[in-house]
Image (tube, rainbow, N blue to C red; front, side, top):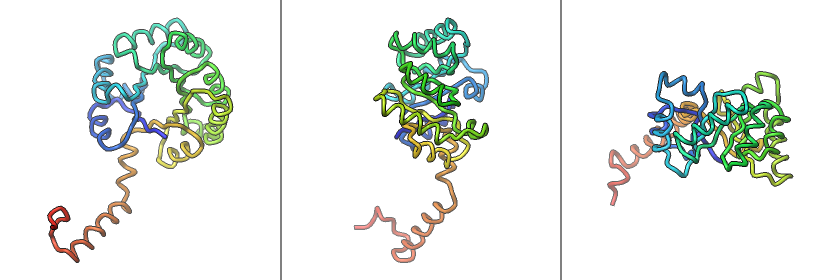
Length: 226
């Protein structure tokens, strides 16, 4: 079980990676758009500096044809670093590019997955990660959990190295459901995790502990007891 941040915001990544045990960062054109007009490659290099070499960094291509996807991928590897996982939408042209990239030893994340067939094909292509869009599938009346479970069964039965990187969440219930359905990892916006840990019930429990301590021990901090 692993967690990644679906973000390109440097401040949020710095702040919340010190709190939550993440294993990497994912991005796409929509996430980058939220940061406004930026120098893309220098920005991604800054993210790498923040998270370090041991964590995964996933960056998406913009092109739609195989040759252009490969050109985007090679530009990312050249201008960010060679360890970036290249996110490729799971189209026919995308699958073609994924297979070529894997022969080159490049890390590949198959993204924009809505159907079992897309995921099965990406697994067969030997990609490192498949990214099913949980909430978007739900909005299309597709059973996200059943789809993820089917991916996990296929991976396990074939002893494939592909990991399920579930994405597109609107609440934490979807996150936990994806993990329980068999996702190896999930990518979540930092704000969603922050909100989950800010619920009133948690604060009340902490406040009650503080009050009980104060009622019995006064204002002496635990760290100052002898």
